[in-house]
Image 1 (cartoon, rainbow over the protein chains, first blue to last red):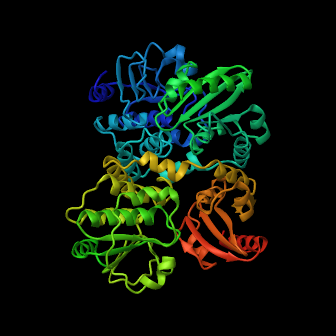
Image 2 (image 1 turned 90 degrees about the vertical axis):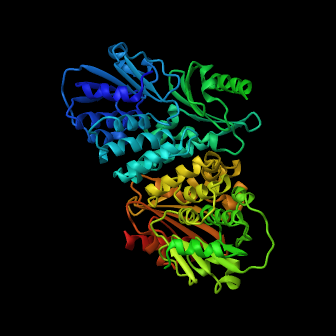
Image 3 (image 1 turned 180 degrees about the horizontal axis):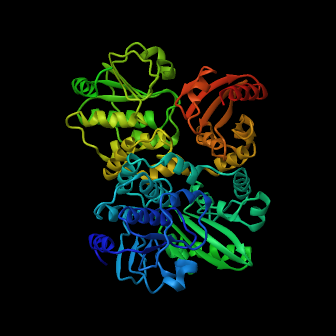
Length: 314
Length: 314
């Protein structure tokens, strides 16, 4: 692993840079990427963020602060991407040509010419913030501050998840002082829901089940429920935090039907139960308190598999 | 208004101090009071927190860090109390003998020998934090850090309400570094709900109504619903944030039946709509984005009165 200053120095010499984000782009990968893109453009460089799949509408403001530039790619930087398989549609084109990898996932497996992974950072945005501080001439303008705030706020559930550190708060303070519209960002990221999304919330609350003497809570989101509520696929975020909220629950499981017997599972845990190890049993992973995996089968068989593995874990 | 250093100096000379909190005690008034109590006890003084009504169970940990002391009262300090009428059961005994008033409500009307109100602070806990920093010999121990974190986190909805400032985050960082169990605090304040409380949440979601072309959202919490869900009166907090979450809503109103035709109203607003002025029309008040009042009548008449005033406001 390189030190961050060496990476900052190298970036200063680069131009015509593609910045890669992970698939199903979230606030941290997008915030980190657009912050870095804005910083590189401030320095007069050509830079562009490459996403796999269209980001949800609520992230559109992150893009507004950078210029759309056409150029011939010379260098590739990835942010918040833990493995090349997470590049989605961009995997084939980019997997072997990453120059710099910036991340905060301890499990990062990317082979890049230069690499910096800080697993103590709650968000990749914090690492990018520190990186920008080491690049001569980068100014924390309102756009970059907004991007960084979005990354750290979304990856910590607004300073609530166990990954939050004093550093997260110090950087939040700096980005607020630099003009990030943090109230609007938090409202859009965490609060505001369309009437249809509220309807879905009602339906989902009705599926809540407690298992294993109340240590496991489970909710289900089916394609039927999405249809009934009339919500789009990009409005489903945030449901996964519901089951963990029930008093006494150590493991909150969200089963989301994707298509043809494929279910995306989100696991959130309390009191140090290792969600990442649990999801690893199903070929997934993530963080200790928040992980995910994909399981195939019928809703019933998926539920049974998840619960019997939960019994072994707890 | 005195400066905070003069108040700190005065406190250093005092002993046998009662610290007053506001009625329906919340995380900020209790956190501020127990932090100050802990600080005064660190300095070898006798100090005691006086509450009106038993605080909710989830706040019990704030009390654990202070010693129970019996002494003859010499001085009285109020924290987070905007008016003597908010002292509840303690109003008669204390209203004319407050020596020091520490607060963050711009509307504070208390007459005290010394007074410091900082309306730019999101929480009274921030003012108490600064006050303690000016008192020689007070150490930010784990208990005091927990109290302060609780105050600032609860009064800002975990750093989300518009009253949050960079200072809030800086103090959060310091209290986290000092060992405040912030994850546990936030989980207990914002996340964890009993199965009965979850049941209530379901019932309340079903009462959600949109009015005035979607600019006003309204929910109702009746005594019947509390009974049906089986929740205690101290488990109702947090519902008031629901109606404001609907996309396009400027004013979210929660009508909570108390008894015999008395309804407690909570108002949360978006985009600068003045909830305090609105509640003022019904004899209540509070902050711009979060206020309350009490209205008597039938559910129907109360609803109509609130909506017609909302129409005038918007």
